[in-house]
Length: 244
Figure (cartoon, rainbow, N blue to C red):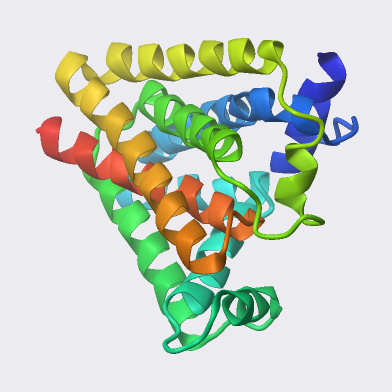
């Protein structure tokens, strides 16, 4: 269990936690979200108090990129390049996504995503709990994708997380994470806004996984990373709307 926690933190954050990646790591993805949410939530709150909402929100997103090594945002750019290209098959889409060079679609999508996230955070009342809720649940959504969908390749990262088959303990730990994310969001934002935001994170993230999986012939690491970011944006948008 401790080894799985360490590997999840080492994979999804800059923490040098060690551990060996495997199916046991999946249940602990939300712990990485908890760590990121606490840190960027504090940065958001302190930055907003000192320099105002725009600077606070920008620092929040910037520190998030550092803490996650840009892993999820890299998925946004790669997925946009492969998903929206016209007239090619699934194998070619995956090949485009594997190109280290970013295309116009990927660059524009990434810029819009970052700007939208900063704009939403600037409009919200800075609170640590709100970010903990979305970052925890977005990582829960990653785990849900690994539970529900087959990998696009038998030798890729997704296949590694699904072999050997996930155990009962993984589901239990994942359930604890889901409850923790919902509680944090509801306590911080209120019942209606909190539950609405939680639902949006999971629904939007999972919908992207399903849509992309169909066009790519299965789940990839880029799809998972992008679903985390897009799910969080969806949750924050709902929170900004219902929290007014």
